[in-house]
Amino acid sequence: MRDEHMVICSPAVFELISPDSAPVPVKVELTYDSRDPYAVQASFRTGHGTAVDWVFARDLLADGLMASSGTGDVRVQPMPTDATRIELELNSPSGHALFTTCAQTLGEFLDRTYESVPPSTEYSWLDFDMALSELLANDRARD
Image (tube, rainbow, N blue to C red; front, side):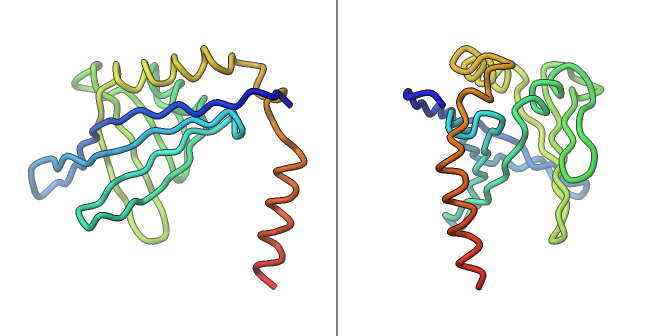
């Protein structure tokens, strides 16, 4: 585990795509925390002042900049009609959402994360003691 800790945050605007209406801009806060080096969190700000958080594999987002990536709940790919934009499709038991966002903005954010924690070094950033403590605390909370 590394002694240094870093958090990278970047605001972004995603557009919610609906077949029945014009795209709706949604403010999103992208966050990368070196304590969870394989993941990126996206906090989607809803119109009610609350956030809906999704956590993605960092590599899934990076791969989705170049080609279709992901299966199941999260899919990322360049837009077929506009390579400067990325499609992000989210599926959950409570619904489905399709967003688009600027490929350059997402790419620059990911570049910053890879500069901070290079590929193949993520393992050395993991804090196993902290992760185990969180797992045990969550397990006790369910009892």
